[in-house]
Amino acid sequence: MNDLQTGTYGAISRANHWIVSLAFFGMLAVGFILSNDVLTREEAGPLRDLHKATGTVLLFVVAWRVIWRLRQGFPAPVPGLAAWQVTASRLVHWGLLVALIVMPLSGMLMSLLGGRSIDMFGLFAIPPLAEIEGAGKLARAVHGYAAWALAALITLHVAAALKHLVVDKDGTVARMVTGKAPR
Ligand code: HEM
Ligand code: HEM
Image (cartoon, rainbow, N blue to C red; front, side, top):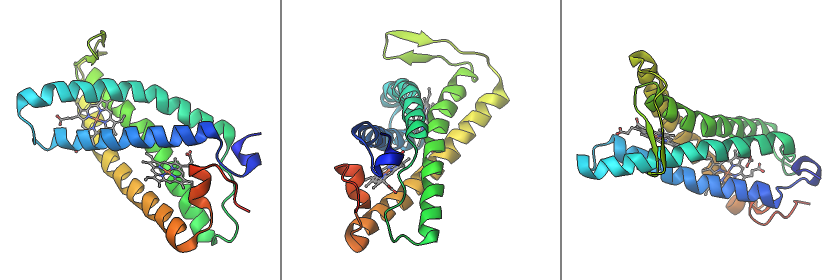
């Protein structure tokens, strides 16, 4: 049975959610550190390489996570939720899923269309596809704006989760933590 049929999130869905969440918190933090000139040039280089290689691996992880969600469907909202909350959560969840794909993809295109390679942890390098100044710049802008959009969506998402946990006490958070289906 899939998530739609069980009315909760199965073990694979929960693992996907928490592993990708943790990875993206780290990627956002490192990205903002890199773009804000907090570090010296020598310090930033290796961290940028790590950001790029990890982000490239994450594209595959996220592709799997999104395909899994599409195949599983979303469990129906817990009973008693207002219509606007159902709509808002659908919008935020879809926005998050889109941003999860856009971030690594735009990051890779920024490098690969900007004439730069991606060094995969020193094991091998993904060579640049082309050096098209406009395309590299566009991907850079998309990466920057999508990062802020993602951070805003995550803030809304975590605030809503906290409200469900502390105020509503309606089992929404439990089904993503323990997998217990709400009554
Ligand atoms: C997987 C998810 C990723 C997340 C969440 C992420 C996040 C970020 C963020 C928040 C920034 C700062 C943006 C700004 O303020 O303008 C950034 C910058 C950057 N990202 Fe990513 N990124 C990801 C993947 C990638 C990938 C796959 C690459 C390249 C292969 C990449 C390359 C870069 C580069 C080169 C910068 C600019 C750093 C600088 O200003 O020196 N990112 N990233
Ligand atoms: C402390 C942080 C977080 C908490 C407490 C949390 C909590 C939850 C809960 C309770 C649900 C189920 C909502 C429902 O059934 O209606 C959920 C779903 C979801 N969350 Fe989070 N979340 C967190 C971080 C994140 C992050 C960082 C992302 C994205 C980068 C994310 C993306 C999603 C998505 C896309 C869904 C829809 C179901 C799925 O495909 O997993 N969450 N979250």
